[in-house]
Length: 230
Image (tube, rainbow, N blue to C red; front, top):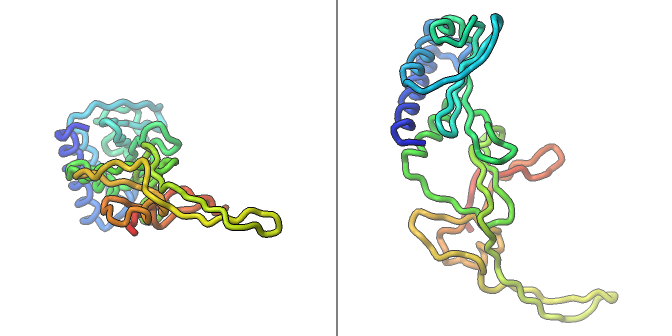
């Protein structure tokens, strides 16, 4: 997203937050019409292109700025802003994470602000050196904040020394040596690796592992809420 667009959208989102704070409400649907119109009108003044559809019962107006979508839904007769004013029902935000099953994960206003602020802060590049993509969730473990695809694999070289047999089963002494597939340290770049890999490179301060895992009802790991260092 262009920096100019990030700044415009972030400014609007922060002003919208103030409207919610002053009203004492947390849901767009609970705001007074005047407050809803204020948020909607200030967004339209940003000048982003929009699209939409609907009929006499319901319609939506959607704006896509790079990978961020902002949608307003109302019970107006058309998607023209002047018809939407005073007939708004709710607004929503989403971020397109790319070609993943989490494309278009919904955010609340605070998460949108946090995401836009991160774009302006020159955030650190995170490189995933595990075999699988890593899905990062919010603190509640419900909304997807980002999906980090695998960019290769770093691993600790394994050694195996035969020792004996137990009931006919071979027994070996296993150890781990130098790390393979790990790039040199670079400013502004950190790497997510396996626990074994991080343990095998204790002097590297740019290595992280996943932490605070998120699981489904069957115990299957869906992602994480944080990163950690060893």
